Length: 312
Image 1 (cartoon, rainbow, N blue to C red):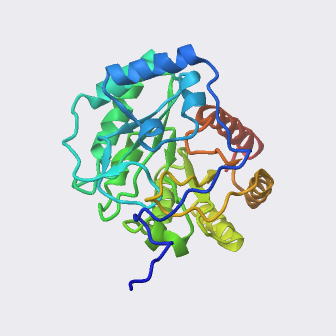
Image 2: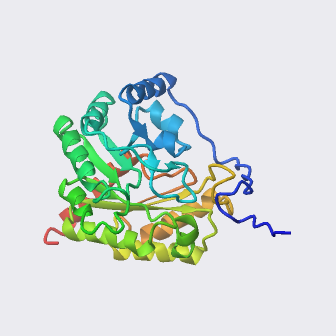
């Protein structure tokens, strides 16, 4: 008889643990929620809020905040934690830059976050498309700050430079987990490819804020999390997000444990003491959660540093 492996990924044998009391979400303004939904659906856009089953969708859409997901809803990779579907993507929509720009204007976004699926099928991983969307969005919304959450552009050479040259205000790429879990959690990615991407962005343009995030509850150790912090700081990353992994279904990577809010608070304190400019750390923290508020904080801190050290 064949042995069963309860830790095996993508097999419906990973029961979902009951959520603790501290993981709760709410709708703040149902009228705004449905208005946001209407704008997104009318323009036939995708959002990571929907595709990745973000737990904060009700709160964010109630504030008319949404994170646009470009280049379709189908990813070429199969990360074991992610709820975005995997398969063969469709062709790029040449009108998408205009649609994103218009939706940003209709939602009256002061800070917009744009992410994407992985597009390993494209020669540049979609870097040129990212660039066009940044440029078009800025043209139509010249007072809106732009944050991109990009793939790693693995094996795409210097394609990422197209995104950097479009000059987003924030360049975000999530490290997601610790190196020891990469082959199980992110089998199509490489830890130091992600670290080096962030480092390279800062080397090209020091004025761009860089940002990365990690999930907890996958089986990582405390020391491994602290090492990730050090690796990201060595890449001059400004902003760190730390959130709870929530297992989307029984077919996804099994949740190891729920992390108590006190532990998130402690990790935030450690990360700030290590030198990150801004740290968001809580069970419901996600890359784009309160991104507008956090950007404002980062900008003020950077301006304060410049005033204190004008020659740097």
